[in-house]
Amino acid sequence: MFEQLEDVTIRLEEVIMQLGEPETAGDPKLFQQLMKEQAELTPVVEAYQNYKKNEETIADSLELLEMESDEEMREMLKEELAEAKDRQGELEQKIRLLLLPKDPNDDKNVIVEIRAGAGGDEAALFAGEIYRMYQKYADIRHWRTELISLSETGIGGIKECTFMIRGQGAYSRLKYESGVHRVQRVPETESGGRIHTSTITVAVMPEVSDDIEIDIPEKDVRIDVMRASGNGGQCVNTTDSAVRLTHYPTGIVIYSQTEKSQIQNKAKAWALLRSKLYDLELQKRHDAEADLRRSQIGTGDRSEKIRTYNFPQGRVTDHRIKLTLHQIDSIMNGALDELIDHLIAEDQAARLAKLEDKAS
Image (tube, rainbow, N blue to C red; front, top):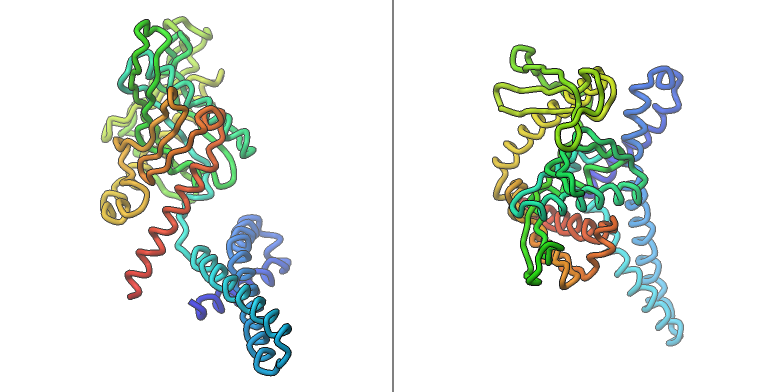
């Protein structure tokens, strides 16, 4: 590990020097790449420097203990030594986490799809609430949401919707949201007071950046244009601005109508198709690593039940890490960080354990 840390330290020095060169300033793409690399390397190097300083503190305390005869001073030195040793273990763990291989998609924007599942109108109402939950979470994180497509039920519910969340690290936090979300509560239309169970599915896909090649032959896609429609099928504008893409090889159908311009809707539809095809490739890789994923945070299967929202008991349970929080109101208002932090910690611990097993 320490050889790797020395290499990281040398590389950070090289990056900083390169950033100061005139040639770099004249190349925006290279400058951006180096700035990103600097941001990734700096926390590792800082943690390593703190580790080495703390190591010196331990060595100094041990040396002073051997020389010191005053009992009161010796007790103080022993306390300092114990604290430094505890801190050393924490710093080593932090470094190990920082050195874990990073998901290349973590810094990307995300495309989120929400679909009502079993439960009829109640599932559609819950889908609408989950959509608003993610909107509020994005607001809390200072991210921006952008609607791509929306199919409403007319009573405040959503059959399905697709939207983008733009912001630093959006995928790194929201990737754990893919799967089946279950709600348990008494619907307003239920006169007998019985608790009903409904489900929705959430899919979180990284936006495909321009540097990733996704080959989509024109012959594989049919493009249809039409007038956008609202609830009940009424037209919401008088021009053929809505766009539907049908990808023959996979059967994927993309519909975009939220923009007034056909060009903008077509651009959104193509971006979504590229992300879906990229996500399919990621899913294939995940299937190939199924054993590893089961040892981490679930299997990544979109049909996997990941979370239950029980309104009568005021609790939210994440089944993958067996965590229950009695904070349903705040969670539905976007307070997802505690849940997501636990998922990230569990994921990191599982990956560390896997690396240690390989090392041994």
